Length: 409
Image (tube, rainbow, N blue to C red):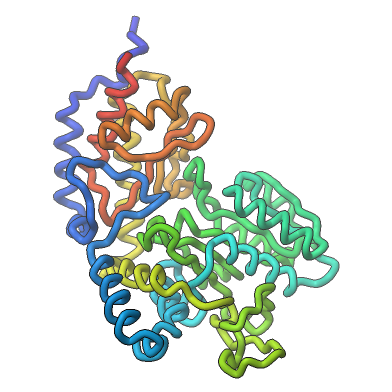
């Protein structure tokens, strides 16, 4: 009789360690790791919560503080390009999410941008479209914002599992808010299919890209996405609290009526008119004064994407997550953990979520031993795989230490 406390496949640790070494040798992105500030004794698998620090950022921030703010002061709004930063950095993000220039503006938090996008979408919809559909498994803030937007616009909120979303879309749907990747399980939702289904019913869709941008191709323009939002501190490595972004498809921009018409989105912001007139294009998504220090830190962080294709990132992401699942299956006792991340590549983001009865304690032990992931209540271990700096050796080591923690008394 087999021993259920033993690994499901008797694989020598050295076999998978050797495989990891070979995979790292073949990795086309392996040199990118040197562009980040990382510890050799830590395996960082939490880039889906906070990306690692790109090495160019400290110097850039120091220059912004000492020279642009310290010496140039108010002149930097023009001479250092502060005023145009939201659109300039938006255009830098645009190719990473499959958008042409002039459709992305950076600023505010993801929550604020979700609110702008949802209310703006409702305002572009006919009065008889009295429902806002929301992904019931969404990150809590998106749900809170959707509920508030529904109350403020006199719409009814319809919360459904993403698998049932198409079945509730209809002539009463104004807009659907959907996460591209589920933050808990890592499931990748069908952006092209859901967008097409909504459009077939005359509805709009807002996509939350927080867990997909910078990890996989998104294709906003190619699939005719209406509006999208996303944070920049995960796979885009912009730093804690770095500003989010808002995408409004070009042909919708003239109709986009933001519920937060701040002076920065005015057609003539320095005219100080008491009457609001929206700017043309992406700037109408702006609200107040840009948060320059964090915005310019983000701009510096985005330099790591020079010469990198999102397709190459996706290829490595899938290879990393495949290899992690292989190592987990080989090293861990049968039945001790359960992957809730889809096996199919078409349904997988860039993380692996493992269900584990004592997940909180296990993650605490992992972090103490240099493997940093995170825990989601009540029983999920999350491991994020950022292809720009995670190696296959990291993956093997993380699975091996996880097995040691799981097997310890």
